[in-house]
Image 1: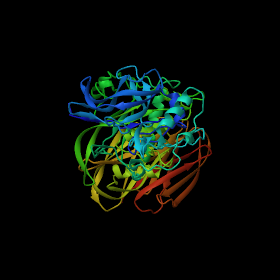
Image 2 (image 1 turned 30 degrees about the vertical axis):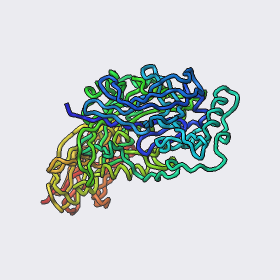
Image 3 (image 1 turned 45 degrees about the vertical axis):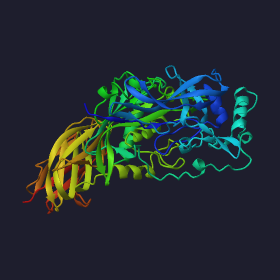
Image 4 (image 1 turned 180 degrees about the horizontal axis):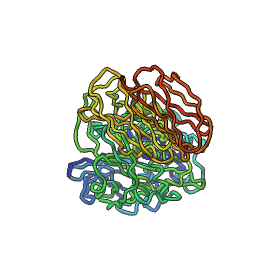
Amino acid sequence: MRAARLLLIGCLLGVLGGSTLTATTIIPFANLGDMALAADAVVVVQAGATRLEAKGDALCRRTPFQVVEVIKGDLVPGEAIDLDSWWQRSGDRETAIWGDPVYEEGTIYLIFLGKLDHAPFWQPMMLAYGLFHQRTINGVDFFVPSPESLEIHAFPRPDGIVPETMKVMLAKDLVHHLKQVVSGKLSWQEKAVLPAKTVEVPEVDLRAAPGHCTFLNFGGTYARYEAFPANDIEVYSQLGGDPSLSPPTLAHTYVSDAVFDLASNYEGINLTYSDSLSFSPDCTNGHAYDGNFDIEVGFRQALVIYNDPCDEIADITINGSNQCSGVLAFGGLWIYAIHTFDGVEWYSGEKSYVLINKDLGVCTNIDYTVVLIHELTHGLGIGHIAGMGTANMNPNCCVLINQLDIDCLDYTYPPAPLPVELVAFTAVPQTNDVLLTWSTATEINNDQFQIQRSADGQHFQDLAIIPGQGTTSSPHQYTYLDRRPGPGQWYYRLRQVDLDGQATFSPVVTVQLKSESAVSRVYPNPVGGQTITVQRQSPVESEVQVDIIGLDQTVVKQHRLYQRKGANLWEIVLPDIQPGVYLLRLVDDRQTEVIYFMVANP
């Protein structure tokens, strides 16, 4: 088995903030008062010394705390609680998630907690978001946002309320005011807890602004997949779907749509949707993406896992109008080796996953497909783009893919230029058949074209292999007749393969085949003489316009003929034309039919 490291990169869609630069995104609560009302417990605690603790066959960082003061919940002062980090180590495998709080021994913290059904029974409600540590400045105690939480950005809520950002607050006033809010005595008022004058705190005021593109990294090393787009990544949707959707299998459609959007926008990758996969996690070390995930999800595969089966994430908070707050999803990848890209060492991606929280499907303020696009992109090693609502990979997830996203993906996975200068690629219906025609201006080390067809634009099958010309600076024309694929819409593409095995894809072309149409054919084809014979089976009697057209759309000859119902046979004298590919266009009052034919050298 490949010795892999698991690089866990999460995406939190929650309530009071946006996201870290790398992989945490939340849908914001309007304010800390709303967050306190949604939390299972809000406490002031003092941290002990963080230690390594066995968790199944792994080690995690566990920090003990002693409760100093209780704002909400059934904990009591003096009680001991433990909080686990998301970081884990199992043999040579490690996990890490950005937004994971880091605690200092002896420091006082204000934490909003969610309750777990398993040890250690408590978890920060939204990782580092809402986590404050106490600082004494000029004799006054303040609660200061944790460094990790400062990387989480709030974004506009769908109800139009502008969420409050994380600020330095008066410690005693904040505790007192939150107690009044959770008891129902007062509504939240931020001004009641803010200092009268600006307080300068180095870790708050001197943080560097994020750059445009960021990348998921492990210990300072970025992570990305190799061998795109020649080799694909198969994306699966967990069998059964998301029970919060109606029907649950609608989740499979969302995943398929997300994969299609990714593949359509990013030319340097190659994702394919491979239907549903039966997977029941054994929750090794408390994770759905550990243990038997390593066995059942293969190399260069990705799996979307629904309904938080191992209870790793605090439940989503949902109000009466199905507007959601909290952690919605994670996206991440496993890594296993080092390679060099753009002069820098990167970890190589092995497999990816998306973990969906419970009840995501009922969140009316969330576009499920766009969330999947965002998380699957994290699974490709891409971090967040700074900004508010201008890109799919902004911390404020999620909007549609735009040029900012494309710029970052095109850097990480450069679109491979075709070693073939493709002048044209067309698919033309010929009644029950489809004629594919393409031409090249130049070719470099071109071994072959693999013709591929799809019924849905995502799942392609190989039809035929057409040899290439190797290296040539002369134009070449190619044709292939796909016989009787059946009525409906069909998608075609060319997979061009170099002599060294590297491959790239052409744009996709589509064609619609109708039933009950006239059927025509031309022979001989290629034409070696001065005449061609047109055979046409027509369902009706009518006049038919017959045109011979060059590839530059110049009409070189026209005929107006009469077709009877049934079999028709016409012999047409060709004009004095140069060798090459021509179109025979037949137009009647029911359809237009185009047949390609080639005039050979005499």
